[in-house]
Image (cartoon, rainbow, N blue to C red; front, side, top):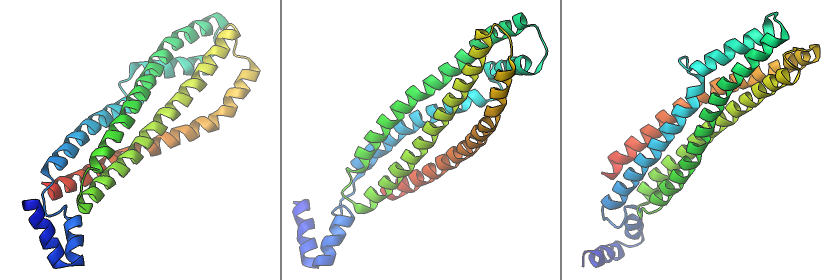
Length: 227
């Protein structure tokens, strides 16, 4: 009965009334849809924060594998030592590199879960009849997808760095600890690209933090409007 009365009022008000009925969800509060979207956002945000923790992990100061790998590479590439000693250090470096690669792999697995959560969040956003709520929810989904793209880019850059490090260590082992002149030239040639990757990572990390704050703000505004 209430639904029929709502339609009757919309018809009596004319075209403008019909538009208002659509825009505000037929004058009916969409509490259940809003709660479902909020719950889904909570699930998405939990996965997003897990991804962001994992992509930050390789670069944290207390990451012992990163610190040890850096120390070993510095010794292998800058200090004068016997080939057998450099080969020993290269084998040790492999252990640290493997640990870092597993961290990036974990981030990539979580990233896949993040895209699944985003798909569910988008479905929840599209469930609103109210254009206002659907628009606000859609803005959250759009920015959340952009946020996910940034974390995906970070995992890609971290993976590229690991691959380059793997190439250096493998070359040293294949040459039985000898740091050949040709290898030194090739390493120097990749220094510029390594510096560019580092600068790119810094920018992406800053962007990720900023986008998280922006999504949180949009979500707060949505909750205030919906509830």
